[in-house]
Structure formats: structure tokens, C-alpha cells
Length: 257
Ligand SMILES: [Mg+2]
Image: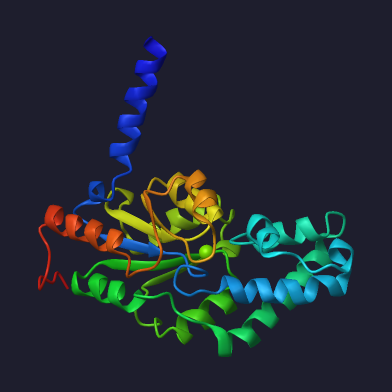
């Protein structure tokens, strides 16, 4: 059965290509922000749930978390605006701006970093790797979250989807991240938490470590991450990073900084 053989060979090739150790020697790491650096999806969901009934969306019935995940999580606000007001884009945009303002007010008290974030930050710093944040969030939100998480000096670049010609799930924001860092996609991997973001990074040609902070595993796997982790404490991540160290000739106590 030549077709079966072709599919088998394709799968073997696809699997080996998507291995994290394939990027050794590692040069750079790219991070999404919402849901990847901090568990911000519950705050976005809360803001949508509170504000949508005010505009009569869904007959005034608050949306469910499942609806939020399927329709809004990780999406660019232009797309959210079109879903909410297919015939009045400007009104949709105004709603998303108001919603982002509510997000920022709530974030001051409620924003929490993802477990183990500082551990992986140290791992990256110890090896002198390049790093950038790549997000579909508005710049004002992105800068607020990075600052609240104490990461302003950590990131060497910040790419905003809205400032690119195409936001995620288009690969452009991730390709721009590589360009800013002068890093190669062959030696870079990405942390992401949404289907839209994973698709963008995979389309940009990089392996993706997916976080299940806000979106269920069965939805994320469809976007083809290399593997999924619960948070940055997950042993699966540290086993993969150890393997990368071995292949890169770096490791415990070794610094390329
Ligand atoms: Mg995200």
C-alpha cells in the first residue's frame, strides 16, 4: 500500500522535525504573554462575562467559559469585534477597548504569574539566550503585564500583533520576533497557550511548548504543539530542557552569558 507507506514516512519525518532537541544549540526563546506568562484568561473571561450582557449579546445571558475559550481566548481584538458586531466593526472595536480597560483595572489585583515562570527565566538567563514576548494583546496591556510580572528587563523585544500587518494565527508576529532578536527559527522554540498562538508559531517554523493554563488539552493538540505542560514546574519541560542542554553542550552551572 504505497499510500500507507507515504503517510508513515510523513509522520516519522513530521515527528522528528517537531522534537524540541532539534533546535540545539538553542539560541532564543519566544513567549506569548496572556495565559503563558500569567494566568490572565480568567480575568479576560470575567470582563467579557460582565460586559457582554450590557450590550445584549446572547440575549443578555452571560457567556460560558467554554464559549469564551472557543471564540475569544487568544484572539486578536479585530476578530473579536467582528464576532460581536458583524455589521458594525467600529462598535465592536469600541467594546473591545472598554473591555481591555476593565481587564487592566482588574489585573492590578488579580494577575498571577504561571507557576515556575522565574525558574525558566533563570534557566534562560544562565545560558545567555535571547528572548522576546510576542502577543496579540494591545501594547498598553502587554507592557502592563510585563511590568507587573517584573520582566521589563528580561525581554529584549516585544511584538504586538496589532502593529503587524497580520496578527496571530498568522506567523508574521513570530517571524518579526525572530527578526528583532536576529535569531534563527532553527534554534528557537516558543511557549504558547492558545490554539491561535500555537498555530502562528508552528506556521513560523518553530516547535511549541503548549501550556494548559486556560485551554483544554484536547483543543490545544489540534494546533500541533510539540508537547503540552501544565506550567513551568512540569517535569516534562525540565526533561526536555535537560536533553537540549546535552545536545547544546551547555548545562548545570554552565553559562553562555
Ligand atoms: Mg495566550
